[in-house]
Length: 393
Ligand code: COI
Picture (tube, helix red, strand yellow):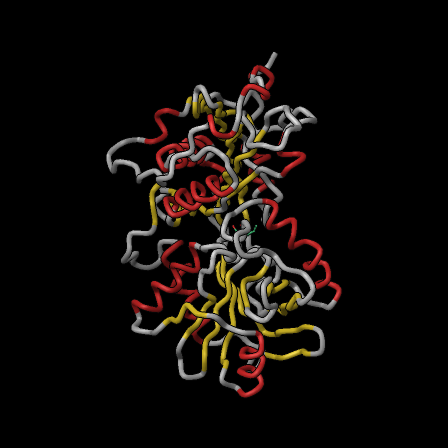
């Protein structure tokens, strides 16, 4: 009998599970957070030749490394059995709660190979903190920053040869957590798995740094007040898939969501935050209202702009205002940002009854400059004034 089956669901209520109100603190600078992660090497790692072959012409999210990080949680033991083990299919009971009620969260972050051979990651502790906030919202047990970092370090050290070094490539790390308890009652799972998988990637958009067209969804919403919009949970992405298909059918690459209450305020794209650059140089981005994901890239762009003495307004941006600004020329640039896509220029804004080209449709100077500045920091080509890059291996 597996541990997943030993929990007696009827004897446990939600109240018995301890969920801390505090987001765990950062790891001690001198400690090695990977030491608690036992390495169990794969019995079937790919050969150097197979790895070399797999690392050619990388796309996004199609190739995976030889290992994964894995830990499990039960109310009695908390997080335990931390290990780095062979990557492979997992066994889930068909009654596992995640399959029925979607109790799942994830993160996305990138590790880069530097010229000196070290592997560095962009602001991983920010992802760790957001992961803990997402866990709290989805009634999952929080994972400490220390454990989050330990899992990344343990996995990256083990699969270090999988970190690519080509232009625009990186190792995309995908931590995720889900309720795997065998129980159909609607309450938080009493058996939870945490895993990290790693995927050597190229650019998210196969066409690279080219402007995309976005479709403004007026009939569908991603999140509502009090919902899970600020959490990084699979359900938010599932909700974006149908409107995303509608976007494709209109010749657009991405979908932009409006607020659910009034259908008039810009929120975010399916998996990216948005910025608007006005012709006077000022920059605006939708304020974090609780329905928008608190993007690490978004926060970093705001910081870079402030460093350059450029004002950034986190505010309400209405669709009408954006349409008027594009028509009048008051809006000079629009771009999207996220870990996977970094910074992506938006060349067209399309919706029912309108099709607007932003300026001349080409990437603007602010978008190009921020993309270069951010990727130069991430790839170690420029100074890192805020200490954002953290060494993993
Ligand atoms: C990311 O940018 O890492 C995301 O999570 C977006 C998407 C790939 C889900």
